[in-house]
Image (cartoon, one colour):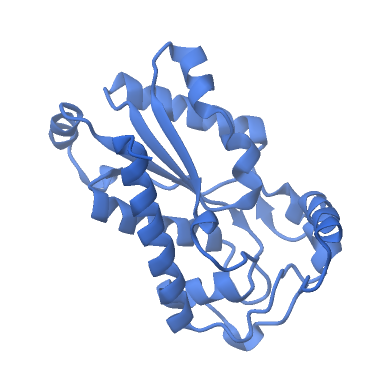
Length: 237
């Protein structure tokens, strides 16, 4: 159920039962020379729509902006951690006032993760309402190692978008065979300056990405999120 397509009357009917709201959160930032800056928002919006359709959730509009300062000097439109957190707290508070007390926040950008921590406690502190707030980052629901504008993201975008420029796709940083210690140090550097680590803004190799692979990866992610959300909401796991 897409919230923005419903009337006030439609939504008021939903609030009379235990409705679950789903808020996708993306980003606007560089994704190499071949993917649009909307990639994170496009992917998380697609996944959220599929999950909402399967589970009957109330799908709210995607928050298009995230915490992406690490991509400077390449293009990014960023919010601070505190701003993104405040927006989400206020949205959850607003949902609570509308008698919707179960919220799933689906994250599509790695840099947003710190802003999404302990939201349930922060909302309770602000409102006194015990909302159930679940936070999922979609890449935690697949077996493949995640990347940035590499094989995974490019394959997914090929499956859902016509805006991929494969003739411009180039390999980026491929951190294979690194020790866990060296990889952690690399990640820390990338969190501060992604470009200093990757040079061209790509983490991984997008050159062999296919729409077929993207559909397989999406199927795995969506099935696992559907299962996880059902388990959390029923308290069976």
